[in-house]
Length: 230
Image (tube, rainbow, N blue to C red; front, side, top):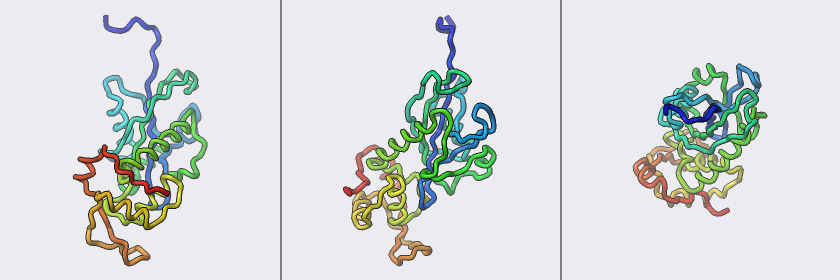
C-alpha cells in the first residue's frame, strides 16, 4: 500500500514569528502581502512545507529566505488547526518563533519580501490567526527568557548591562531596578568582561560584556533565573 486509505489531503504550512530588538524596543518582522487572500494586509512570514522536508528544515529555509541568516535561534511553538483559519483551503499551520540580531539580517532580502520591522507595541492587525500566534509566541519568549539565556540571541556580540536591562524591560514591558538587575545578571557568571567601554554611553562605567559561549551552550537548559524579583 503506497498511501493511507483516506480521500482528504490537508495542506501544512509554517508561520514564523520573528522577534528583534533595536536597542530600545522589541520588534516583529512582518510582511505586507502581495497576493490574495488579504492582499495588502500585514502577515507573518510563512510558506508551505515541501514534500521531502522536515518541519524544522522548512522553518530554517523560510527564515533564511527572508533574513539571509543561518543558525538562527528558532523554536517550534504549537500547531494551529482551526477548520476555518484559512478561507481558501483547509490548512494546518505549525508556528515557530525566532530570535535574531536585528543588525545582522540582509536588508535587501527583507525589502524583496515586502517586509519591515514594526514595534511590538504598534503591531497592526494581522491576517487569519496570526495575532494569536504572536501572543502565544510572546508568552513563550517571556517564560523562556526568564529561565534560560535566549535573550542574548537578540543582542549584538558586545553589549553593556544597561543595554541588556533595556532588552529585558522591552520583553516584559516593565521597569527594572538597575542595581538588582545588574547584581542578578552578573551573579550568573555567564558574562565576560571585554575590557572595553562603550564610547557612546553617557556613563563612564558602561563596561562592554560578551556572552561566555562555552558556558552558554553547555548549560543552556539549566534554570538561570535571569529576571530578579521585582
